[in-house]
Image (cartoon, rainbow, N blue to C red; front, side, top):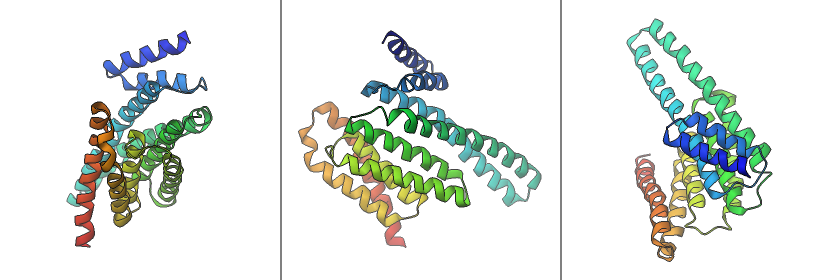
Length: 237
């Protein structure tokens, strides 16, 4: 127990120092103890993963944009150099995603008996397959998108036992709708899924305490923004 507490403390310290790779290492150590993670530990794991991935996803988007501009200009030599650099980032992204997915399958899901944790981990699994689908092409992209869909589907079925205002359930609805829109190219399905999640939560939002209400509203506002944006896209097409 002391080792676990020390790892949590070290993860928090690494977070404050913005050393997210080390933060993630501490949380992976706890996950590999094959114990049920607390809500705090789950969130520390999520934050570590998000920041380690986020920096590289941003690098990939930036390099892809620069590469495209160079090709438009006809600068094939520079474009080739950028392509090689982009592929290096893609290799790092692939390694991180596969590592997190394996951690979920081998340790986190087998160690949980709580509905909310089950939904949380399937949402994470769907997220990391979705991240793979963002830059993979051809059959690899289709496989990653399919696995993301499967993970989200399992999470959605389990989430039916949670309140519509539950943060994990709302986050799952948001992320699944992003998969439908950005990766699967199903704007209507994305619109209706996001709208349904929003419509189910709003009528009972006042039942929450102020802090929980505030947290839920942050996600509901993003859902509503997406619903409005996607509705314009559907009308235009």
